[in-house]
Length: 445
Image (cartoon, rainbow, N blue to C red):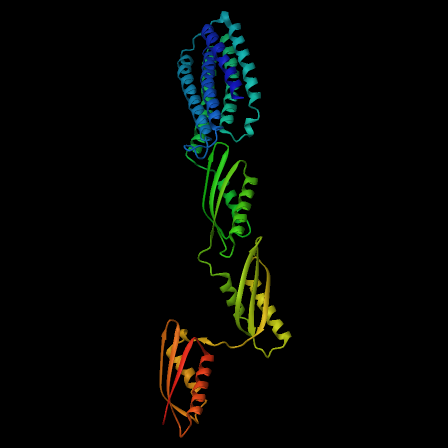
């Protein structure tokens, strides 16, 4: 497309440039010089498009698409130069109001304009789809074709008026032409300059952000960066996801987001990085807390949370009073399920296993000295008829609690009976304190 346009506009340079000089028409000559700048611009755009089709390499990791807006920027600068040159030549002629054209060769001038019209219509037809294209290079080519058609029409009007005795018609046409070219050049320079500086439309950024945050499973979107390079839109973002989401689920979520954005924005390259929500309390802890708040629950344990296909599955064990009926225990389980569903989103199913509560021995190393001594004293009170406690010594080493008890027995008692009582004391204390090394020392009263 650009190659054909370059060849066609180059022929206009030769025809209008040569015949414009012969006839002496500034309008025709200006249109020819405009075509010269246009030909050079088309050549630059053609080279830019060829370069932008190259795949990414070590020096251009995002590809070569930036060469397209660079070509559009050069085209805008060329148009601006043309507009300023035409204005510079037109103003003195307009002031002088003298016949500069050769009226004997007016047919030659009309022939040059007619040929240019044919080329302009050919180029506008070639670029007719460029108005809807995202390529700045094709847009630049389309703008140039429209500008050429408009400038040729103005040149025809100005040259025609000049041949009828209105000499300012030729210079007036040139001034109008320069204004049109200036408008197009400013538009091209601004748009392509913004793209080269990585400026991006706020609407595009908002659209990408909406696609990300509306995806189920996404807590929030951070560090969103968007840039354009030619027809491509590059976007990078960090997505915060629940900490219970597996690596596979997080990868599937990122792929889903990328697919949504690509469906809404053409030719998009998306990179999504997933991170867990660090400040969030683990879901297991939240489930334990919610279940413990239900009246009748003595304890919860073995809580598991599994995240599959955007849905959360929860199982837990709850201990209740063993004297409760099955109906009463079932009602407690339903209350736990309702509370979890109300407080945690994305829950697909909650399964509660109800079991009777049974006190388990405490880990002795986790208790303080006062608690340990209370347990020992309570145990010793079960033998008031036999002994009296003289000293209790406790200490912790290697996560074990060592308990030494010195006791004196009341009255005369055989060593066999004393040993049985001391052993029973040791067993009773160990049942209440795990990982405890209990030694009862017996001595006479």
